[in-house]
Image: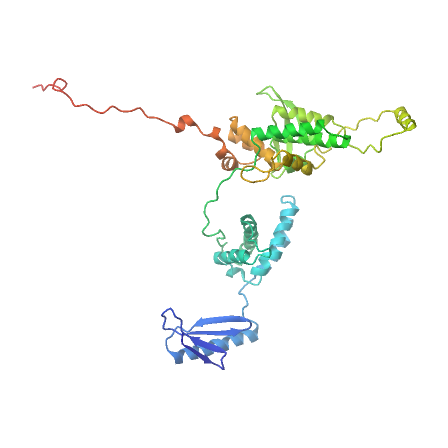
Length: 425
């Protein structure tokens, strides 16, 4: 590849090996390699263009205009986004979700896009960011697809601020190229056999409890599992549930005693009608006294007699404003799952409290529940149920509609002379 140096070696002229006759110029200036095509095959003309280009770079550098973005930068848009997002979504988005957006900007998006002008950020820039994240991971492991998707969501929200302020005319397409349709997999749910094994194990834990505290915790977990599997509530919805939010009513259509639950959680306020199997667990929760430390048991005869002489302590039952599930039973739940070999499903996904909701939805579908009514009762969409649940339920397939058999047609037979119609004159 022929090369020539000018301006004391500060600028080099060269031709590429791809067969192009034009000369290119390059220089290392202010910490960056810079290149430009002279668009001419004349060496003398190319030298003049290269000299003018280098002097122009020096002039821009002295004026403070070198590498300066035209218009507002991504950092300015991010500042505006952080200033208004938390205030605008107060009460609609959890503080954790807001903090995640700020973490995405602080840790990854600002270092990559910060000094770029918002007009320079395109679909190609977003793809370069994806490649950069996968190549420069601190842990040596590429970030998960969901992690990158969440970071692109934050990028899109910041760019929407730039669109609203008139800094850019439209939002670029930040969808990932080469993206194929993701495989739809079943969410980790308990099969009927696994669910029976689970509540049988928790019931045995209650019977084998050695202390009052242990018995109380296991009773709470047992009733929690039965309650969740027969209502389909999300764990966060159950966490915020109070006794005043639940009413025992008689359903007019089925003439069964059910629970009418006023739900507050991920999708705001809504209502849920339980199965009749959820009534007894809730009655036990309603009539179970709150746990309070009992102190050391009396051991001497004198202490036992003194304790017997005291008036019986009145049971402190839950109040209407008390939480239905005040405790956290995650460790006990995971311990039982591990002991019964139920921690993971067949696809290797871990079972959580959410799996009880997935069990409820799948069980209702297998029993022929209407998808639209089920979606309303679970505060989700028909699309989500059909995508993540109904596609895996064999009962949703109508064999009679699939295995249709048309009646066979007889082959036409040739007409004989006797069967042919006679000509009439």
